[in-house]
Length: 141
Image (cartoon, rainbow, N blue to C red; front, side):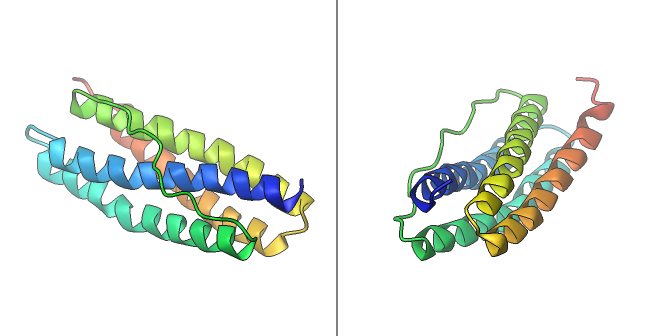
């Protein structure tokens, strides 16, 4: 994979990270019911990590000679707390798929440092998937 194509893929990742930031902030504000305090804290706790991912990606895009994306992918709508968690889980699973691909692409492009950083991001995203799956595991409503 050439660097131009890699920049395009990293910008798609950046747009998804920007979406994740907006998603977590929006869902934290919209969550309702008896679990509101816990779910709001859960959503807000993820914002810092997603922001760090976005910051790294933006800087890497510039380092590779590109212009970082500024538009977030659309935040999926959700009407209930469960739907919010399901949409978060969908987004995190997609991030795991994309970063797994991106690691191979970075290695193919000779960007070993990028591949290592993406492995760290992949580990974060995998942890997000597992934690969200645990919250949803016995969700009755």
